Amino acid sequence: MKNYLYKTILGISLLAVISCDSDSDFLKEDPETFYTVDNAFSSAAQVDAVLVTCYAKARNIMINDNSVVLKGNGTDVLDVPTFRATDSFADYSKVNANNGKINTLYSGFYQLVASANLALYAIELPSISWESEAKKNYAVAQAKFFRAFAYRNLGELWGGVPIVDRIISEAKYDFVRSTRIETYQFAINDLESIVDYLPEQTDIPGRVVRGAAYHYLSELYLALGIELEQTGSSGDTSYQKAIEYASKVIDGGTYNLMADRFGIRQNEAGKSVWWDLFRDDNVNYQAGNRECVWAFQIDFDSYKTKDKNSKLAYPRNYMPVMRRLQGMIGADADVGGRGIAAVMPTMYVRNIIWEGIMGEDMRNAEHNIIRTFYYNNPAFPDLYGKPVPQELLVANDYNLTNYFPLFFKLTTDKFVGTDQGEDNSNLFRDEYAIRLPETILLRAEAQFRLGNLQQACNDVNMIRKRAKCSYLVTSKDMNLDFILDERARELYVEECRWNTLLRMGGTIAVDRIKKYTYHTDVTNATLNFAYNLWPIPQQVIDRNKDVILPQNPGWK
Image (cartoon, rainbow, N blue to C red; front, side, top):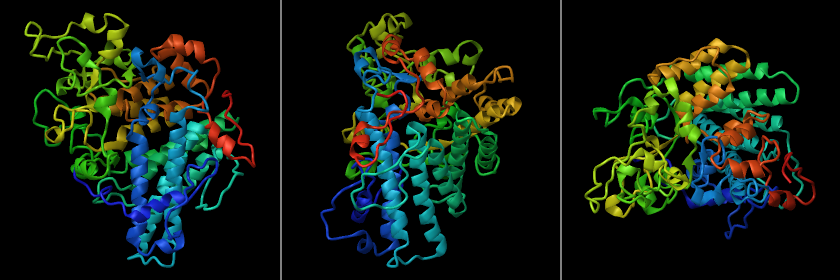
């Protein structure tokens, strides 16, 4: 959609990277300019340009090619085709402290911290004149929101990490790790200090709102409660806070699940409201989508002119490689676009969560998960227009891992830019950062952990009723596995599955990886230890030369 959030990033925003954190040199640059932090800012617009870089950095981390790791490569929901087996995050000969993708993600979150800290410093400079105290407070709120967002991810994925709460322009080699509890608490403190400065809604799609802060406060308190229990304390007070904040989103009157068809394609027959949720121009709250709490902004015109990250490479990364099948043209919309199968859905996502009565679900309808393909190459007239036999799609390992079901939430039948050279690799629609069902499932998990099984069921069934499921969950079904199953049915590739599994603690992540990854032989041969944190990048440990940064347990 057309929007204004990422279109203009002033040159001054490049100063965001001079704030450094020497648990690596990721955040340190020597700017080739006479500007300093103190003299570079002269207007509120320049401060806002730094905030815009925060939006762009968060978006790029969460939707770029590396995001396939965050979304679950190597977990229970995503693996890779056999021809990409060396890229599997279920191969623990390659998942270690020197892994480049883990290193890049860790770096990215600290760069986001740097930009947020720079904005907070600049906001208070005497050279900045603010139109009103409310506008200044909103600037503070956005900066602290992104700092909390970064530490939410750092805490869930790496645990206790160095807390950097100010810009640092000198070399520093003595950072000390916090505990995981302290990391969560730092993010909580940031969000609670600014939640009242955030508006209920804005006219500009993509700008953060109060509901987004409530959502992450719910998630952080849930994670804090789990970690407190891991250390032998009670998590009940934290779980109650998680429920309290989630309820502000769920029951506050601003958001609701979309129950009826909506958007510019709502009159197309044979589709559903679930299908509508993922169509162009339907994502933002401002477009009438009342379950969108916060969305990352994508714009084709910006992509063509200067913002090459303004895209969703979902068709390229998540779609099957149908062009390898005789009788198929692989880049057409009816096979999901130009898929290269960078990752593939596991059998758990394709089949297991839909088995039996669980398959009677709008989200599993043929227009939402396409399992029947039709030969589309007119050069093969004997095949053209006929369905590809199902037995051929699963005939061997090669076929099974290349010609998998097409999850239509990750593609489109109306690609943008084909008249300007685009090859059906990318979507140019906005993308959910937070959708109401995730908030509901956070509350369900907190209720479950408090022993409130019926309340947990009620929350899960809110989502299942919208999906027209024939089976509603009862207390006898309610456990963490069912909650994770429902998250997979509702939030596949929307949630960061690694965050979800690792924040749950214990051996949940490892157990599910061993059970559901496709390449179980590789996993069983290489995953010989339990963990619930990713490894701290080795180069971060090495560069912090004046103080030892301990590695997370289990990682050599």
